[in-house]
Image 1: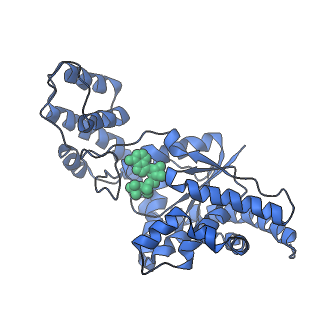
Image 2: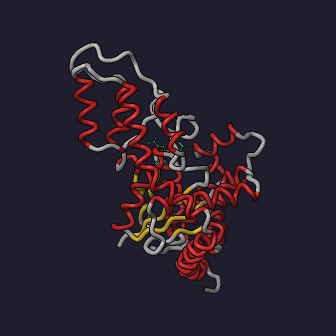
Image 3: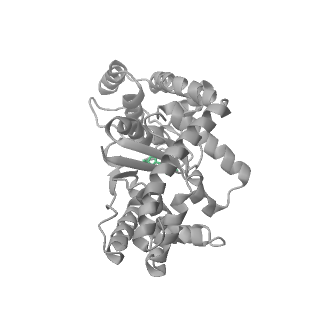
Length: 328
Ligand code: ADP
């Protein structure tokens, strides 16, 4: 079975965009691949979070992914900083990663622009750490958004370069599994294209019923269709896209027919959509709360994940040391 590894940045709560755009694919992948998921807390150090910040966001992410349905028995979840052999591979890869090529990576240039007072070496070597995370387990596939493609190319370059320098066929080149090819783009309800944290329009999986209702009732609409069967303008199409994701087909058809025959009342649609989003989120929200209050269970999941991932990385590192000329 092919191996899939995915790093999750601990950047706050999951929203519906993350769920339908990424997490849902992860859940499905558990049946089709040998999966491992890790929480990228080393990577998060590039922005200098406080210890309390790190602890809280790692716990949040772990609870939310479990609540969504990642099954740690089948797909270990581990915290990046628990798997030390990766650091050693990071060092080896850094010896053959060149300043010029690292400086040319778009995400580095962007970060350097957005945090000019903190252009640290960790930012520069973000792609080598990412490569170490994946190559340490000799994974075949990495689920990524389009923004990670250049990092994936660097990873393949480092793998090829290692093989060439030591004249071995050791590392395979991990392939990108483009999440956007397998998922819908979840729209924002404020008339903008995409739901996102930074867009400020996200509906979070942990939002309570009242919050969901407030966010949905605020959704941008227009004064209604003026012709039978007309094409929906973007803000209205966005509402229908959300209906398609969370509501029954009959509900979607009901409002779609009303739109087409110009009898639609957006207030009714929004109320139904809010109720359906809440019905979708409620069980996940309850599970998030349950996991959040079960520190023992979370610790056990992380420990078991760390054991499996460390064993896998240690095996690779033994072989890598020997190839390099060190003792196994
Ligand atoms: P945000 O845009 O809120 O900062 P992230 O960049 O952390 O979200 O997103 C992580 C992953 O979640 C992305 O790589 C993408 O696969 C998915 N994702 C985020 N927002 C959406 C969306 N609106 N529609 C579809 N997928 C999304």
